[in-house]
Length: 153
View 1 (tube, helix red, strand yellow):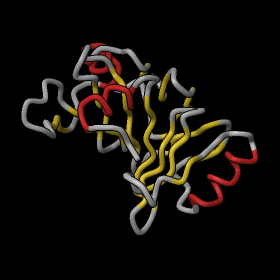
View 2: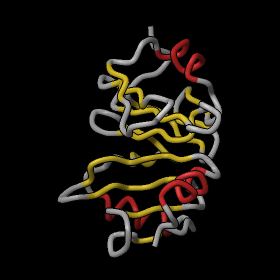
View 3: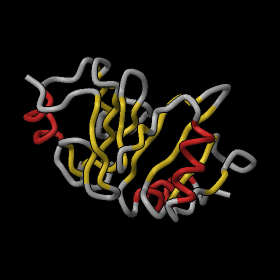
View 4: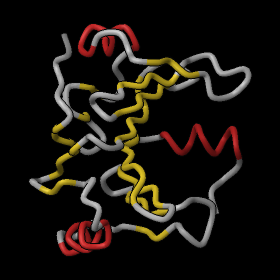
């Protein structure tokens, strides 16, 4: 039985629902049960990416130490930050509200990613034609990413 529903609170750089940044995969499995699917995205990847489709989340683990370092939400998830549903299809309004609250949200669409990111609160919005996912990352996540893939532009 899962300790989490598809509506969950975000505490930046600390936790996503009951999943703490820094949890081991074993701790995640204790909290959520077995994933619907475990994916290995790249050849040579040591840690899987666990999919929980009914919750609307993917959980990724650091290849360096095996601890949770990224949680990605998609429908039907409703990640909440200070009462704001971050999966609101009107992502421009959500980003505007976050900016008015004093958070720096960077537009990354013209560089290397498709969306917006805030290093203030460890959140990113992945947008193609519409809002696809909202992801939450741990401090240092992009340091490990950039060491492997080169710096983001």
